[in-house]
Length: 212
Image (cartoon, rainbow, N blue to C red; front, side, top):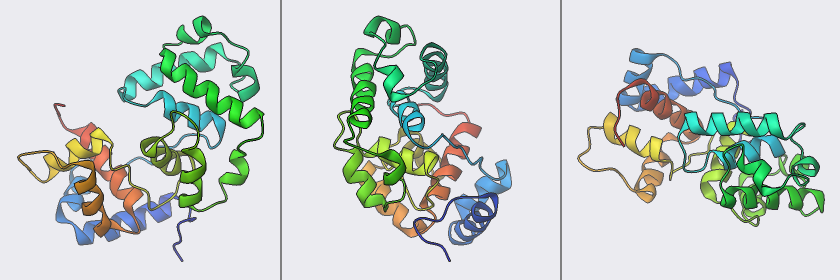
């Protein structure tokens, strides 16, 4: 039985893709043209959240490069270890001052016991969202992507993600881009597989020529 705690696997993704394709001909067309979407994943916990913060408002390629450099500088990448590095060292990885402050804030929240990511991972999405958003620099986009990529929850949709917005516009041949609020409402019809719908749209976005 599918619940919000069901973890995505090749089997659940196949089932979800089948359900979505039967409901939306355009989503079915993505699978026909480009195959099943990858099950993109990040580590759960501190590393996954740092990777998600790094990915805020930058391209996928830039985010990967910055995170790789950060992981090579801060070894191992733990909250305690990150707090021993100064701004210049972290800027060498490509982090902005703002993101350095966000990463430090998360590390401090963990080391001072304000948040326990292992325990939090067992909670429902609403609780996780409330707790994580108390940390400066973590908003809905970051929480959604952490739930989707790191915790592999099946029914999460990052409504404000520009890639999803552009992909939906292209897929449906819309004259204008939907707003995040409009896309959130559209995504309601994809419950309880919104995370798989997001993967399908990202897969489409990455497979066709697009202009932002």
